Image 1 (tube, rainbow, N blue to C red):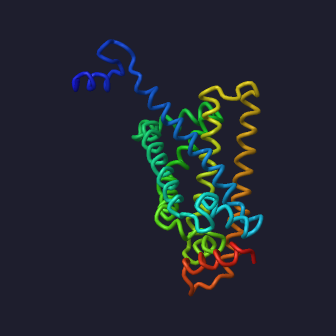
Image 2: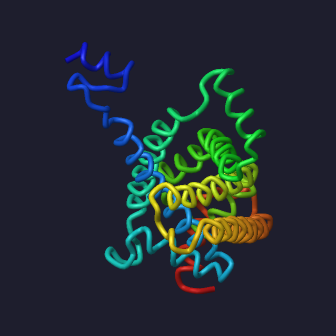
Length: 256
């Protein structure tokens, strides 16, 4: 069995002289995890942008994800930790599967760069952006996910704004915003091309939808970012983030 696997790894052919199905399986799981993360990205952006409606709206979204409709007003912040854990698993799996397509040495990098400049193919350029933003997300996304995993009780309009400004997460989030929205929108577009989804609308129209989605996500993200910054600047840095979550519970939960 071991010898067969060694031969398959070098030749891409099984011991039965058949083409190995492993690359196709890996491609499927890369697409599946990418689709899950891309759709989660869009949903997360919409939920976070609820701050643009009101603090009460953002707090309602927070409590909704804590299971307030099932467990009452108190909710269970642990549910947020479970969601964060699922996203982390999908993120790590997707990154692991995507790594096999990254240029791993100078020769491969040179071939990619030459192909990109000679062909001037827009989808190749999009892949390069996707690869670069994906690499950046290795470092940018995990701190955010780790906070949600370990501090689910410290999320809310005031608590999150406090984290933005007084715990200096604004610096992380501005880079994460562009990396996630570009990577996610390009990834969803490439999935549509790869699997033939929405092919009836044509590739040009699909590309226009992709750019419209990118612009929409980035603009909405920047507006939400500015709203959290504005709220955070008015908060007392001498207080703790937990105190502001308690204030959220008292003021937003009952309406200011």
